Length: 308
Image 1 (tube, rainbow, N blue to C red):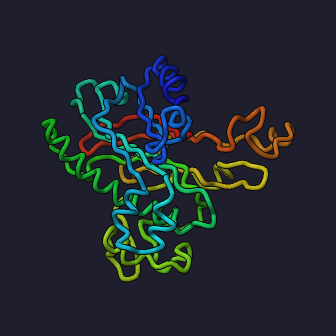
Image 2: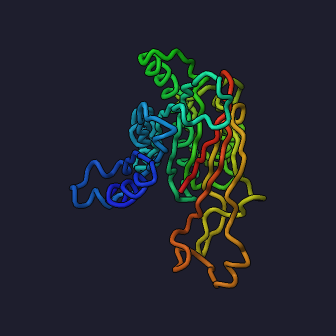
């Protein structure tokens, strides 16, 4: 929190950005002197191209408590984790539309940008999957609420017309239940990542179950990165793998360019066998994608989405 308000926000404001931030849930129970050191999630947006309509905080421990119905592992495994998601309902300004004809109508396209930090511990793969599934349900609710908010601003829109970009440190490998669920829109109810715990009664209330023995969501998402582009996003002494992602609405967005990985040759030459390192400030490498967005009417827009 301290770094957001004292460094990142003022520095990025100099470059034309504004931002929102929320610390993890435990910050609510801390003194001010301790709260400022709690990590969390932030979203920055260029003010010349986007206006912030509304921000939304997703607290997984609160969702777990609300949906536990006395289920022991929901209360003992999921609820104690204080991870969060943060979403910003943005709306494009006239300056956002770089590549449109001069006489094209001005489009106020709503975009919901979400970032999340999912629990880290590999022993809690069930918690990661539950948190991600709860996040998808919250995003559905946020989109429905956002449509009502926009109607109050005299902008009639359907939830399906609001574009979605989902970034995050999901702490999950590409073959995990988390990424299977986000990328394919479904996950079997007996997926190995649920371990021996049955969350079925809770999840059936939260999620769609359009097909027998599957949990589903309705978003059509694609990952901007894969292991051919980026062999790892997290690079430590004892672990190297892809756990950070940028998902986008694949029916209306197209990646135009990506920031690639650090050179393996450079890492070897500088004897970087794990990060943080004097040359590399974080064990997570930044992801960056340029997306072309086609709105529901006409035109196209270029925008840069990054995750750090």
